[in-house]
Image (cartoon, rainbow, N blue to C red; front, side, top):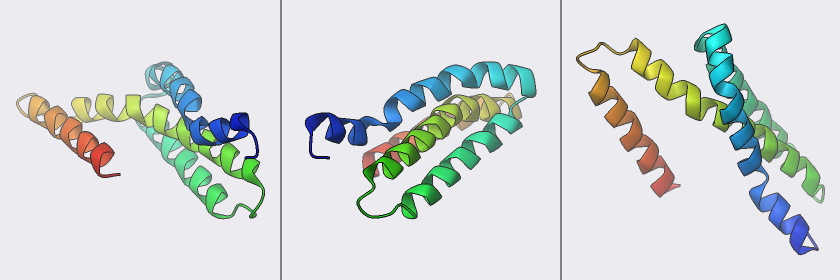
Length: 112
């Protein structure tokens, strides 16, 4: 983190991976159904969090790799979760469920 590039990469490592995760999520949901991408995204986030928590002090690139893995998982989930929620909801409750999902996502972004 001694250079501005290293600091910027550390800070924004998850964003490009989230974009790639979101781009591959739709084809994965079409090919394999909704649940396998949900599981894959959750596994990516869990592995990235574990990797990040076990990173050796001083090895910044370990944390950067963990952030990339977390970003890919969150991008995948950002596409798969709304589709899954809308599909499992009853038609008369679908709008309410999507509104609540959006509300709680926004509250999570604001509070974290």
